Image 1: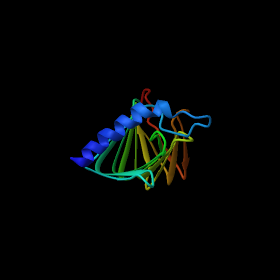
Image 2: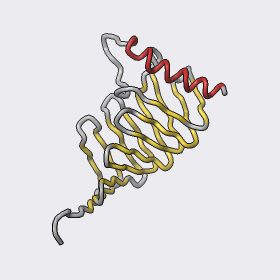
Image 3: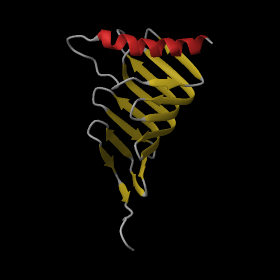
Image 4: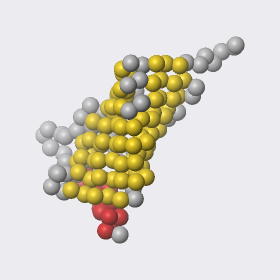
Length: 157
């Protein structure tokens, strides 16, 4: 019950205090509101982290991230999310695209997600794999190391 109350409090703080925490040099943060749910939560207010474990789901207005666990880093003032480390059965859904891996790290300052541990992106019948996959969210572009691409043509056979 205490953990559920903390989740609600953290969510309210992120939504209500974030606009009030603007300063001359804004800190990088998740774009838009984010809702994170899980079975357990361990918060470390001194380290400014929150560890979400078991069936973790992080939702923003334009994408959803699933993982076994997520370590969320946030600012001292305002509680803005600056980085998320997701591990175990990671899945990111955005529009028609699905990216899976064993680990993903979101960097708010660069608005990007770096996938490692067998990353695989699927969009319809098209598939991209590699050793490391970096998705630049605002630019809607990707960079893949040691990539392999399988494209299915939609025309006549």
